[in-house]
Image (cartoon, rainbow, N blue to C red; front, top):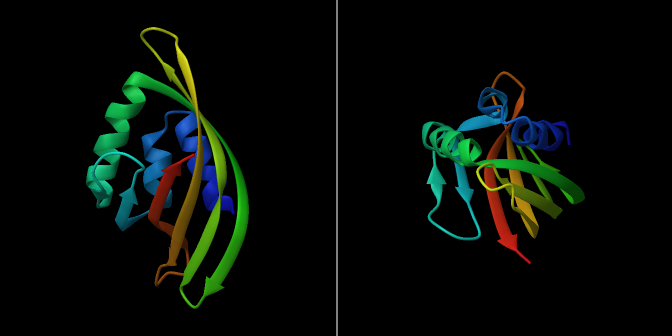
Length: 119
């Protein structure tokens, strides 16, 4: 679950470079609202814009984890606090999620798929 904690920290610290380190080149993000984000370059561009407007705090509670060959599946629940940097208003969003991690040829795991649903 190190990838999950690094993913949280990347958002909390608004560190897009840290996020880049843990994401697969072929990442696909399926947000609860809006269009899917396909590929690391699009995700990083999206996150730069997103984090320029909002401060994010994620409190994730992992549930099940299953590893099969070079894929690992994790699901859980999180509370995400989004604070508008202009107004200071904060919105708490409880979500459920599924993350799929892929083991690369060099042996390191990367985030490959992110699927979210707001509760």
